[in-house]
Image (cartoon, rainbow, N blue to C red; front, side, top):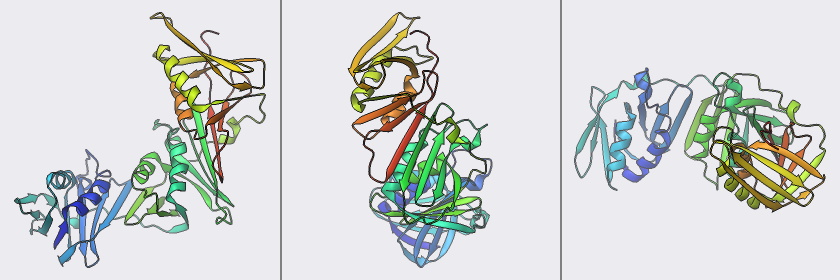
Amino acid sequence: MKFSIDRNALFDVLQKVINVVPQRSTISITQTILIQATNAGVDLVATDLEITMAAHVNAQIEEPGSAAVVGRMLYEIIRELPESTLHFEVEPENRLILRTDFGNYKIAGDNPANFPKRPEFEKQFEISLKNDVLRRLIEKTVFACSTDELRPALTGVYFEFEEGYIRTVATDGHRLSMMKYNEPNIQEALGNVIISTRALNLLLRNLNPESTTIMEIGQNHVVFRLDSTLIFARLIDEAYVDYHRVIPPEIHYEMIADTDQLMASIKRVSLFANPITLQIIMRIYRDYMEIFAQDIDYGGEAQERIPCEFTGDEFVVGFNSRYLQEVLRHVDSSQVRMQFVRPDYAVLVRPVDPPENEEQLMLLMPVRLDQV
């Protein structure tokens, strides 16, 4: 293998694939990056056996071939080099030689034949989505995923591909977030899958807002095809929870407030909340609400009043302030709608003016009140 390549072009793709290379692994080959030089250019491939990422870059190929080199070392030396043309070739013992205007470097490697092959993939269906739509479907839900590995289904985002729409759902048991995007090109129910948060966060870092991504769904894997990048990820093979059961069938009270004003007030008041429970109390009246927090151990407390519109006379409810702030942070409209059944029942949070073709619903469990 022998080729020449622009340093900046190479570093751009290295920044993508290095995120897949594990910091530590008992399987040493997964800490390498596979370099494949063909007449079409150079492909860089990295895998941790759950996710595989391949990125293409143009180069001047003198001799096609492949090499598997220590990923972190390759990334770090390219990062430190200034803009120039880089020249690569492979020694017989799998070491990669890098020649530059500043010096020569030899990077340890492994036999590229040992690099893990991608599992066989049989596509069941595919869908093409604009990247701005795909980004919103993910960003508006992935924050609510669980980190509890004992509940693997909840550590990913649930994708529903139904006739006329796509819905994404995530929950950790304390909060739930759903996004529905109307997609007329889906003319029949295609299926449902759970995609890991790690794969989705990796995808988010590589979405070009002006482009489109093709999602290919198989029985055990999903493939994201971007402009010059491919992400291949194992699906979470678990049954998802019946999230419909936790959505209240009827609403008794509704409150509308300015999103930014409510968020700012909660941020200030929560500074005085108990650092363990993070509890704040909302006393809601017809045309205003009081937000209260107290830390009995240190004697601090705070109370603010902000305007709102409420359909009842008085309603008192408590929240974990961190969870409530995270939910409000994902409301894009200037006003937020909060819907209640009773103080100990799930609260629905929606934007008052959602974007066209979208339906967003978030659910937050209140906390038991220490003080009313």
